[in-house]
Image (cartoon, rainbow, N blue to C red; front, side, top):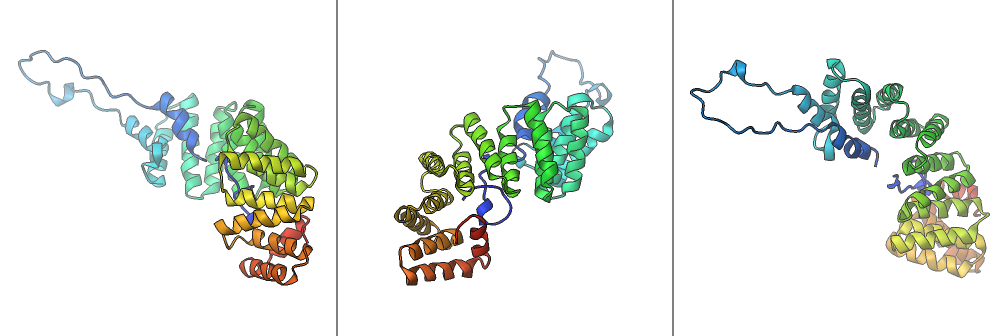
Length: 314
């Protein structure tokens, strides 16, 4: 079953990659704009003597600070990246978008250390300088999201989408937050926007399958979403589990059992699949098999029965 990065087994997310990667923008957008070029070697003419050190051009230390701050490929520890960004900020030589990006990248590094308050403070500074950059808003929302402050997260995602309606990550993240708030219909709509912007994103199709299945109003469409996800990413246990869940809600008991069997071959200890198969077996009159599956699921997750009940499975 697909969904957010936090909570129970029912809130798993692709992240648009999805979920969709938190610091990807710091690498991709910054490289072209901020990477420093090495000085070109000039052709040397014969000289009677070498210039003394005072005549030689000294390297600009900000170049190395940007390398650390941008931290392409996570080549440096977060603390080193933070020190590079801090040196740039404190130098008072950067301004405008460059200063905003130094704050943003420092926020990314604080987020990597799970220092969410400092991350939010830096994202807020970046937004103050450049309020039209959707990624800054999206990542501040993600930090609020990680803290469990879902209302502030959704507000930031709303603003990110307003300034950049094609920002798939913001739609995905808002869908995840709405899902955690129990608003599966709106979450489904947001995941649908991700599938439009990124039609080959298997996790987005899977997430909408799960949200639709839980909402219970578009069960056949939920199955179709899972089908599409599995075409893109075959044998994904969470997607097979979501499709089994949709079949169970549809009353297609044999289909549900077949799906759960396939899931449990891939992941024998996936509690939702064990519980779902147990319920399906009980509906088929297999009391011993159903009870055994439910007991096994509860041994893995003692609250699985309560969680499934919230999603309409008893």
